Image (cartoon, rainbow, N blue to C red; front, side, top):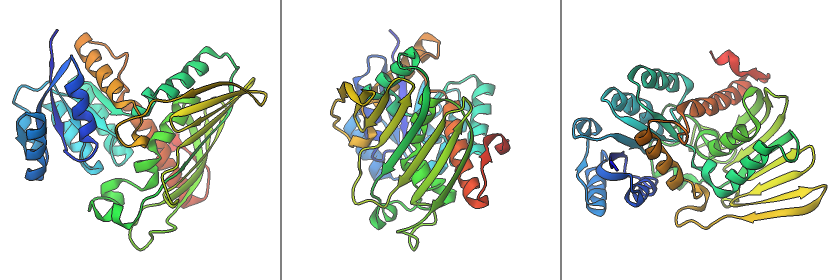
Length: 339
């Protein structure tokens, strides 16, 4: 079997999850790491026993098959476009870009070059999320009547000051919506379907002297299939509580709490599943390795059965931008207006 030669651009915290997944894979080998901070790049190169670089453009001609982009948000779209135009497939950590305009440029480049462009929404590959998706697909409890997502986490002054790009719309793209709650929004859309409109609001309630982005957001989400969703997210809590997603079906209700879920039929518990522990941050979930291995499998087999396509990343950005627009206007915002 051919082994893909992989490069990782960006050697911050999340890159270690990617590098470990590459090393465990029988389909790939880590051939290069890149970081603008030479000490960090060198340290990663020594740890993973591969060449290191400080300029990502230098890896475009060393025989790589694909790259993982694990850099600050504002660099995603330019790096992805450069790598696809150099003939490489690309897997991008969330968010796809800082706004929909940049995301759409990435999609056009993927289409023009014929390269695969995937987004890292690893929580879709958590065991609990996969089980919930099977329940939905099998329609065993009827159609979804409503869905709700709640995230209450903790981000303080030190968090934003450790990385100069955080806390600004130009470089981070937003606050709690795009950096913390984007996975929750993705799961709501993956479970309930495409979104027609949103009505919501954002605010900065604790760190208004530190950041320009929001630390709190709420919205009603109007899905095209008629389902109404509720969403709330805040970084103002004292700790990182497990994300909660509630789904009401015609014949049952389901509550997903962090790495486990509870299914009830008319109030009586009928199924409980506990998720596996992870060696990384708990809110990263257990899905990175499965997502990455699936991406490699699809590349080698010339298909797209496992890739979370970049279009899914664009959909979530459209919801986020819709909430921002609705907050400014105070009106319900239809996503079609973004085009």
